[in-house]
Image (cartoon, rainbow, N blue to C red; front, side, top):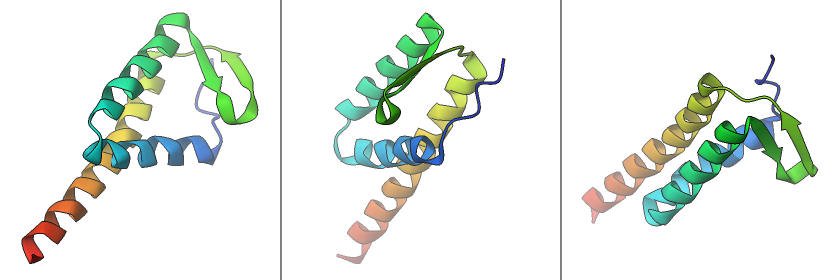
Length: 86
């Protein structure tokens, strides 16, 4: 089952969502519930394309969490660097 064929804009939304979570922590919980729901239901929701595809697995979900973590980490570092200069 190939589950890695997601368009680039979804990778970018995961990164951007992680960055937003630095400022609004509730975003992490919404993201986590949403991703775990997809994993549990064995589907992937493509809201920007109005599509639902069957097939999901823990590795794919972990990849989405890693994209989220990348955005979170970059935003956290930038925020903390800006606070140091003040």
